Image (cartoon, rainbow, N blue to C red; front, top):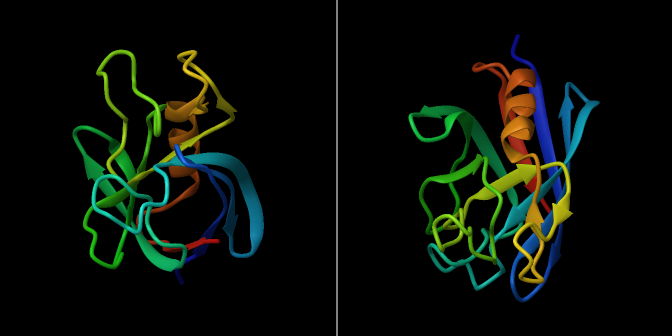
Length: 147
């Protein structure tokens, strides 16, 4: 029988971004608490907005860019909404000059201003996604509640 993995994200919206406090449960037991970072709410517009608060089914996905990560399914009017590593949403990555996401969800340990622009970023993202993915099996039943 498959395990049930539930991720809950409690959001705080600002004009620049969306900050989140998240909990990961496996079969009802809290296994991890972490932070999330998303784009601001801009009416679910593609590539500039976070997704609507709701409950979604999630699957494990693998790509060359993000390795093993999570893919949120059936988001209205959106495709390829992923949960992956990155540090900047609402502010610009100093190396690329742009946000690290186009509507996805970044994960990490804390919200801090990493590049000194006065906008919060997320820390320890790569280690956090690795920790999350170490807890999740490919055949788990995964759902996310964004509130």
